[in-house]
Every structure is written in C-alpha cells, then in structure tokens.
Amino acid sequence: MGPGTLELVPERARRALQEAEVIVAYDLYLKWVRPLLGTQEILTPPLTQEKYRAELAIQKAREGYRVALVSSGDIGIYAMAGLVFEDLPVEPGSPESDFEVEVIPGITSATACASLLGSPLTHDFATLSLSDLLCPWEWIEHRARHIAQADLACVLYNVQSKTRQEGVYRVLRLMLQHKGPDTVCGVVRNAYREDQEVRVTTLSELLDQSFDMLTTIVIGNRFTTRKGRWMYTPRGYNDWQAGAETPDASSRAPEARALPSGAVWVFAGTRDGSALAVQLAEAGEQVVLSVASDLGARVAPSHPNLSLYSGPGGMEARRRALTGARAVVDATHPYAVAITAQVQTLTAELGLPYLRYERPSAVPDDRSGIHLVPDFEAAARAASAYSRVFLATGSKDLDTFMRAAPGAEVFVRLTPQPQVIERALDLGIHPANLCAMVGPFTREFNTAQWRAWNIGAVVTKDSGDEGGFPAKLAAARDLGVPLIVVQRPPAVSGAMHDARDVLAAVKQL
Image (tube, rainbow, N blue to C red):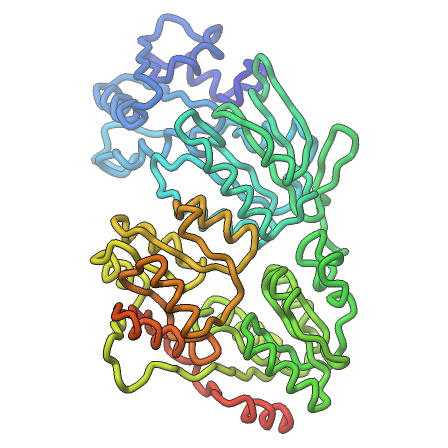
C-alpha cells in the first residue's frame, strides 16, 4: 500500500483491503490505511515475525477466507510476497491449490524517495538492502562492490538500526573506492509520512551523517547532477569519456584523457608488470600502462613512450579505451583471475592480440616447512591450529580468512592505502596487529617482524621471486614456523614467464 500516505495507496490495493474478510499486517501499516477498513478480522503479529505472518495468511486462505496480507511499499520488493511463495504447498492456480493468489503492486521506497529528490533513477540503477538478518553480510559487501564498480545509481534500504550501526559506513567506503567523493546523493527519511525529511548531499559527506531504519539513501552515478534542492540523472550517457573511470579521475590521471592510438596496453598492478611496460617503451613501443589504484598510479614508472591509465576498472570504460589499441599484454598478478578473465573477454570482443605474462612460480622442489593448500578457506582451516597467524596475502581475501579462522589472532601486512587499512580494521584486525608498507621485504625484515610478533604460522601465496616468496620461505624456516601456501589458479594457456619472450612476441605483431 505504498510509502505511507493514503493518497498513494493504489486503487486495486484499496479494493482488496475493503473486500477482505481477514487482514494480516504489522500494526504500523494498518495505522496508515485505517480509514479504508471496516469490520474485517485483523491479525497483527509483531514486526519480527514476518514468516509467521505469511504462514498465518496462508492458513486463513486455506480455511476459505478472503485474506489481505499487507505490506508497505511494494509487497514484492524486500517484503512479504516472497515468504508467501516459499510456503505455498502447491502452485497457486493449479487444480490441487486451495486458493488463488494475487500480488498487488505498490510504490516501493526507491521510487517514492526518488520522486522527493527529483529524478535520480532515470537510467540504470540497483537497490541494496543492508539488513543482514536474512542475507550474509559478506554477500551485501560483495554486491555493493560490484554496484560501485559498475557505477550504477543505487538505493540503499534498511540503512541503519540500533544493533547494526557500522554496516552502512562500510558500504559507503566501498562506494568511495569506485565513485568520486562529490557524487551527488540524497537522503530521505519518512517519505510521504509525518516528519518527512529530504536532503541532497555528497557521497563523502554521508560518512559524517547518521541514519535509521526509516531512512533511505540514494547514491547517484558519475552523471548525476544537483540542481537547487533537486538531483537528477540524465536519461542518456552519450558524453561518456573513455578513461573517465570516476568523476575525479582526470585529477588523478590526466594522461588517461589523451591515450596514444596504436599503443600496446599493459595491464599490470605488479612490479614486474610495470618493469615489462618500461622494457616495451625502451624498445620503441608506445605503451599504455593500466594500473588499478591510486597507489599504483603513484608508484608507476615514467618514460616518454609510456602513458598511464589509472583508476578502478569497468568493462565499458575499458572497452572504449582499448578501441584503437595495437595489442594487450596481461601482466597482472597470477591470482588476479577476475581481471584476467575480463581482459580476455575484451580482447576477444575487440579482435586484439592477447599476450599473457605470468611470473614464474618460486615454490622449490624441497617442500620442507611448506604446507600447500588449494584455496583461502583451506589456508584458514590450516592456520586455525595456531594462535598467532601472519597473513601475507594482501587485503582481497582478508574477510574470507577472518570468517574461516575465527579462533586465530591475525596479523597482517597491507599496502598503505586508507581504504585498505580501514577495511582491515572494520573486519576486526587489531590496530597493533597491522603493518602498512610497500614490499617486497627481505628475509631479515620478515624474520625480525615475525619474531617480534611471536608468529606461529605464516599464510602466503606463491607470489614468485618478485612477490618476495623466497624471502618469506627463508624467514619461516629460520623461525621454524610453517609456511601455508595457497596454490596458484591454473595458468592461462600459452602464458609466457620471461619478459624477453613477450618483447619478441610484440615485435612479431
């Protein structure tokens, strides 16, 4: 029955309420539609008993009553309809069914709040509930990250409760990894109800604000614009610029606006990948070096023949930027399977030569002190036997490890990026157990650090010589602690392990 004002209750919903013999609802919803009710039997289980409400409605319908199951907004969006269909004994409308089912659409919070803000959802958008009562929090973060990477406008439901205070800020920080801090956003509380509040703000300013379960947040995309007290998103994106990964990308990487045509693109993110890009540039090739973060842009090499493409990834932006490229060299980390798959898809689609460079494995034939495991869950299970564990795998799989090894005290070494450090702290890493530095690190440094922290086991990847694997192995053996090594994903067919082979292959194109 819509957002909460009688004027916005759809006509079909009005008739259903008036024709019902039994009404099942949370009592707050009935307050808004009380003038439409007559002498019906009214059943109001508490707010937290959603499943029981659905079961009760089904039971009454099977007894032969005409039942109205009431929800605010739209009953099919984050509401009761799904619970009803879960519990239906047979398909409604079939000969075996005891009753018919009709789902009556309403006005959901996303569109109600959007109307009060202007027109922020004119183009593609996503909705995301931040309630983890029925959905694991890691799924919520995973979806939030992909929404941000796709630069979709987004509506956040169930923003903040008394027992769930930090989640919204974690999601906002995820958004800030891929959206500009000045992204236009809106906050609506009690849409179309008493004490309605509406304000337009920015993504970075949201971090300093507080919310509740009556609040909805609308996050724009890079094209969303503020006009007075309104915000709106254009209907078309014909002015999309290749390389404009976020609204402030030009301030971080001005080179991305004037990329050379016919260049060899190198996707790196590793020291050896950047070194390979310089070798190609020194051989006379025009090279575009693509890095994945602000830190990568700051530590990237410089050369007259080398241009930088920086900022978070996105299929559409990369597709447009790669138009006119000569070839692509994928020199990303051996464990960066997602970006490798994306680059392979784009090169196949655009008909570009694809060359894969992968640093050689550094796991020796002598496996003493090495415990090889197939994935991070297995690494966490192996590490849980030790009270103090050093995690040398970066931040990407930190949440997986923390969930799978709850009993271990975890120590980490991460790159000095504010969002990476913040995420580690949010996941429960104690500040005293965190080291923020750029590697690789020597055997002596590892030995001293792990001894000072009294580490019982070390978890790492097979990161090769460039990733400091030999130094980690030597330090672990010096201290007599096991080195738990997550095995590499399968290598790309035809991958080259010597930079000279890549240089020769590029010259033959």
